[in-house]
Image (cartoon, rainbow, N blue to C red):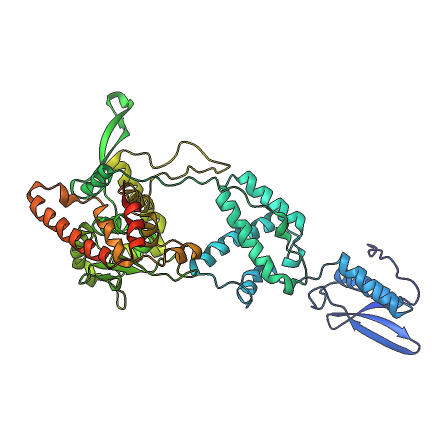
Length: 471
C-alpha cells in the first residue's frame, strides 16, 4: 500500500485543513467554538487543490498564532515585502493602460506603435519568465534583462528608444494601480539615434523619375538559364518594373516634391485640401496635428496643378463618403504602407541608378538604413528652396515644422510671401523652347505682384526678406 505524502505538522492548536464540497477551509478551535476560514490564492479565488491549500494555510497561520496587534501588523508588512500582490494580469495590461484617464491622448498610429512594443515585451516574458503572470511581478532586473535582449537583437537606437518610451509610459500610468512608487524603466537610459538622414535628389534626377512614368522603369538582373547538356549558366537580362497604380503613384510624387509634404499626408490628401480657383493646397500635417494643429498653405506649382487636373479622371473611384485624390493609394496605405515605400524605392533605383540603401549599419542596427525613399522628395523640396535663396523661415512654415516654439517664431511671416517658392522649384515646362515667351510673361507678372507685396510690408521686414533671399 502506497503511503500518503508526509506533510509538515503545524503544531498543536495551529488549526487544520478541511475540505467541504470541493472547497478547502482552515479550521481552528476557540474554546468550544470552531472557526472556518475559506482558503484563497493571491488572486482572491478559492484554492483548487491540497497543495495550494497548504500554501494558503501557511500564510494565515502566523496571524492566528500572533499574541498582539503589533505582531500581526509586523507580519503583514513583512508579507507585503516578500510576497508581491498579484495585480493586473499580463493579458489585461494594455486594456488597463488605455482605460487610465491620466494617460496622454495619443493618436491611433502612435498607439499601434506602442502596442507593438508592448507585445514584444509580453512575448519575451512568456518565453523567458514563464513564472510571471501579472504586471506587479515584473522587477527592475527583468526590465534590465529585456533591454539587454534588445541590445543583442541589433535594433537601431531610434527603435530602442521607442521601446523605452512605450514601456516607461505604460508603467508610469499604471503605478497607482500597481501600488508602487518608482517606475522600473527609469533605470534604462536612451541611446543615440544613430539615424541616417534621407538624401535629396538633383534636378536631373527628379526629371528622370517623372520621365520614367512615360518610358517605363527598367533594371538589369542576372537570371539562371538551362543550356544544352543541362548546364546552368547565369546571364544578364533587362526587366521592367511595373509599380501598382502608376498613374496615382506619379501624382503622389508630385505632391511630395512640389509641396514638401510627408508621404502619409500625400497618400491621404483629399480634394477638399485643393483649391484650384485660388491655386493653393491647404492641409494640416498628420504628424503634428495633435501637437500644434497648424495648417499649411502653399501655392500650387504649375506641374503639380497639371497632375491634379489629370487626377480628376479617377475621382469617382472613391468609395461613398471618401474624397481622396489618390483613392487606390489611400486604400493601400491603410493596410500596406510599406508596399508603397518599396515601389517608390524601386522607381528611384530604376530611374536614377541610385543605391537606395547604405552599405553600412550605423550603431547596432541589423538592417541597412534608407538613403533615398519617398521622404527624399520632402528633402528635395527644402533643398531646392534653400539653394535658390528662399528664406528658411518661409520654407519651415511651408513644410509644417512640428516644434511649437518654431511655429510661433514663424507666425509673423505673410502667407503671400510663400509664392516666392514657386520660382525656386524646377519646372519641366521651363525647358520647352516653345513656351519661353509665355514663361517670361509669367515671371514679369509675378515680379509685379511681388513688388506690390513688398510695398505693403514694413521697411525692416522688406530688408530682412531681401537679405534672406540673396544667393
